[in-house]
Length: 403
Image (tube, rainbow, N blue to C red; front, side):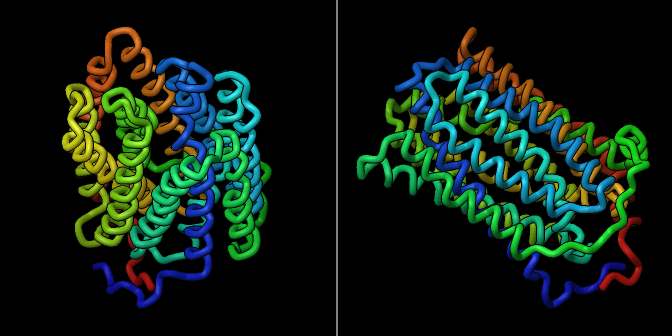
């Protein structure tokens, strides 16, 4: 039987990781906010180019999540990997200020997302190591909410800078400031328990040690990832429909605001309502979002509703996927498991962003977003079919006398 929530879950480590996520997202979302307009107006890139940038970056991030997650288990250290990842992401994002064409942006985005890939499993494992099992939802929901608040502030800040005369390139350069603060938050304020290195461990062996219920969860997350396209494609579609980059950026602010709220609220509700139930609801909401974008026309109220629904879906997904993972993974392979989750998601993101962008360019937005909705729906069906096995595993993993 589960025990009552501990009176205090917001430890110094949880707070520092949350602040790192806030500043890091503030940094790269400032760049992401103006990137579609920069590509369209200055670089003259196509939707396929944007899909390639996001897809290739996500694909590389997925590989480095797997390797970085396994490496943190093998090394016995999580913090150095996390700190280096935050630092490289910061520098690579700021390099957009020097871009001469879309392939330069592709290279910078790829390097930034590679570093983001190797840091994420280490950060998530640090976070899971910091709190008891019963409050994983609270901790991951808080971290995702802080991440998204950074994404909420970023477009507002980017728009404000544009209004006072800053150029896109100057905004890219200014991302150095919050990115550096994110790196310092992890470096100075997060502690980790000492673990002996285990140089004999191999990636293949550790992947084989992942629990079967977690592998089933990876299958579901991977299928969903095939339809989880980059949110910048939503911004690009809104820009086309309204003819106003400012309106599209404002909708992106709404998206991030709803995402932050839903990540925190659903994280807090995970223990009561069940993380798998909330994840299924979030997957379904994203499927409805993709379906809506397949048919929406120049209708501002409809776009507002769809961006809000997308924020609800993504907030829930980002809070619940690591919560479910932490519930299913033993500590010994936690980094590898988080890396495998990132790899499954990233592989799906690579294919999804490329396919949605390509289908959009060739046959129109209905084809691209319709494909995404189809894959999202398939993941919901799989979750319903396999939920029982994973639910039993989650309950069996709860320590009988959790603090």
